[in-house]
View 1 (tube, rainbow, N blue to C red):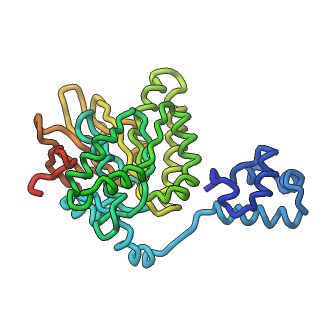
View 2 (cartoon, rainbow, N blue to C red; view 1 turned 135 degrees about the vertical axis):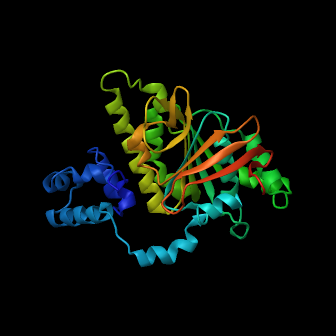
View 3 (tube, rainbow, N blue to C red; view 1 turned 120 degrees about the vertical axis):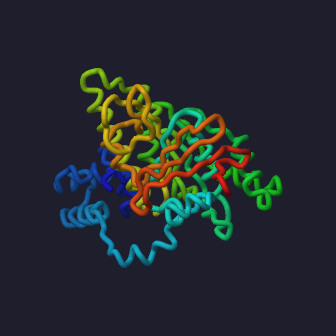
Length: 330
């Protein structure tokens, strides 16, 4: 991917520092310059410069695979949500290398879902976890360490039966509070090094819509285009991270109401229009799987599998308890 840092493309550190003095830090920065410009900036011979440009070009060029290779890797490419009914519908759970989004109104358990997945990620593989850490980007200050611990101890009481294991789990969930669109984008652009250093197995962005909707009034001229460009950049980076590190990315989104028929993706129909996921159609094409959560009554809620490359449309009823999200009948 073009935004990748040069040192992640195999360029020696000393040469990266030399290029940085000329404001060339990413693969994109390098490839936007001519060979002669790079030659003078790097202090290399023309032949060495061409070799470096070829190396960086190959790194950023999209790779290919075959259907056979994907089929062979399928059994090892799923991450259990710890919800048996949902894992069954999704044919194993969240698929590594893809983006899953859960959208719905406030209070339906989107953040609870994120906390639960964070706990599962840190579990040993024999218990259905990844034995990895979590990158958790919080844009609403909704993360609760107390609730994280409560879910862990109540959902997996046999494992989290000691203070040491609870502390170890909590220490593997890395929280980044980013409260503006630019902060979120900058964090995502630097995330590849953090994933490597923390050995992360899951990226969570809770929520993707929060800061965007606060900063962009789409009724003002030009704001809708600027918002679309920003979301496009975020989606590109998230897809790259998911694919490059073969890990799941889990996002939360908000809802909006449109009058008139808006096509697929609706969660419910009210008197004032159709309730859909926020951020528009362009964003909806950026996620591989979309889950919609909604109220049934004061206690019960529904989870809809609205979009998935492997699963049909499905509806599951659930409640939120001390152990997190619990499907009816489990």
